[in-house]
Image 1 (cartoon, rainbow, N blue to C red):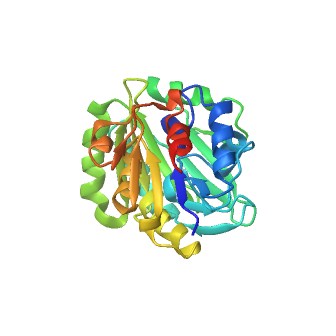
Image 2 (cartoon, rainbow, N blue to C red; image 1 turned 45 degrees about the vertical axis):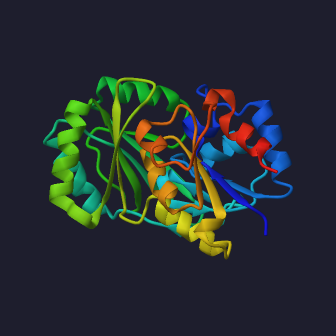
Length: 274
């Protein structure tokens, strides 16, 4: 049977400038001749597709932190959403801490068209993040931001001093109705809190992908760097952290690479596997 490799994108396979190096692309495409390769990312289908145009993928992609599983041909395999009532309740609770989230929602299941809602009231961390989405056609500014019918995730960006107590408050308020992931943004002093459906994370999605491939989770090797990769690390047969991964991720990894994302760590590992 062909080995299976699934990698996170940002800060893992992608370089810090959000590019795929020629070396990584060459190794990936060569490896795809005798292995099954795919990605598990916080990015959307379109954003992932833009980065991966020159890569061969032959397994469903785990997208938007695990809320969507889609084949490279854009066939929807699974989706986990937060309904409007719950989404609006989250926004109302966050407002008590004077912060409003970005809302990434699905407008149309048939076309997988997404909406990226952002509030008029922004903090400095949120302003910085939006610079990366300046020309994104999904963007919609909302004076009074509310959830949509099918919300894939709500994401707060801010300081740890704001988001840590907000996380605890949301956990106390909503309990197991939601999944909460608080993590540092490693290339700034900001933090982000991602709110998901309780089965909308990468771990649940990895299980679905392996069922789709009719393989066991022990058969897969996963690569990652951050908090949202930890669930995959616990399930996979082999977990690999890049050199720039968070320490808590490295502690759970079977392999810690000597190379970072900017040094093509994942590709160097794949090149060395015979």
